[in-house]
Length: 205
Image (spheres, rainbow, N blue to C red):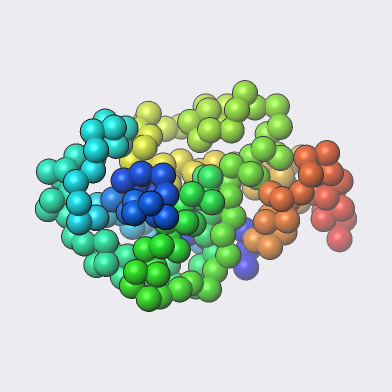
């Protein structure tokens, strides 16, 4: 499967780790086929407990909003159907994968797709960037945005645009067009000094 056919997702959560009882409170995702967004998914979800003031201020999601939201079980069941067998991308994917795994475990489902991290890929493609936070990279790459971050769908949309920009830049710089998802995963884990050769070698295959 090509790297530009993926589901890009983002969670907002009650804290940093499901290992300490934290839950997802919002999910946003965009489905891309051949680099075109063909569907979106967004929902708040009620974790079954009150979130603290820091999370309310950080995300703009408050307890009143969550009180009327559907349950995590209901939302994640719907998202499982939306996801299908697609490969996935997230910015700082290890964080989102932990919550995806934890929420899917709650409803006893799994997934067939692989997970790639746009932040790890950006560290290799944009090694000269000031840092590799999503907002910084969006500005660095001159990607148009509305200045909304830390809401799930907005972050997923920005991550999708950044992902496509990186694929385009790999094509422009190295003629590395139409790379499969598995190859992009490999690039994102490669030592930084070897990335240029890895991309160049792919282009001559």
